Length: 351
Image (cartoon, rainbow, N blue to C red; front, side, top):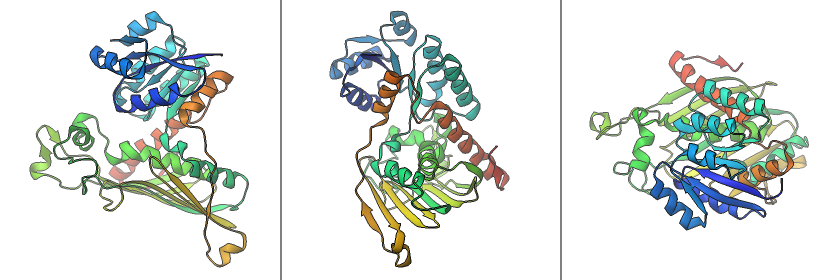
């Protein structure tokens, strides 16, 4: 494939970043914007210099002058719209989560693979230079057999106002209400930290146990029609195939942390510490003789292609990129199991 024409479906917040990043790739052109709010689609198109805008996906598919699509619609719409795009033979770069549950995610995965279409999910922290370098060191055997790890994704917007006041801002209120489509901190950021663990260690999950907590945040447990009923903090114990044990936790009550992912990986001959946020990342290593003095060294990490670039490269080569639909479906299975584990109070195998 020479030049690549991209359609962006859904023109909300993250779509602006996709328009910027795809437009910066040589031989890639964003040619159309689609939104059920046509005025928003037109405004988005004007802002990013996009020639065409549509009020429906079916209208855009009938037009057909695009090679692949970015799906940045709301979570509950991902399945229907992605299947519609793939039925028209269009590769899809989908926002996370791939679907609202594992059966839907698996159906989307199998449809993409049966059609032989390039498919990827925007798990954004794959963009962190440090996690890519860490995985390289793991694959090279630099830390030996992994025996333990600890991981966290920490936010504090329920105790601090750096992103505004959640009590009055619908951008945050909906994330606290199952009636508005939220699955809590687990559904919002759990997918990122579980992917961080899976990619950083290169290991598959074998079993997990999860404990969730929902805290009282308003009188009567509601603000207007937002019932504040979803999980605010989650703590997990996990076992990986091969025997490594780990702990994973995520919270919106991590006062003092804005938006921080941490992963420490402990092997028999070395260890890694990775930190990342939306813009930066850092890798520290404890290798060789340093393991006897607990000396950590900051490692210079080369820049890595963004997910948008990986998708473009996959389209050009015809070889599917990562993270794929199948990988994202596997992470969704873990999220679904967390709810079962919390309800039943036990460790569950990951089949």
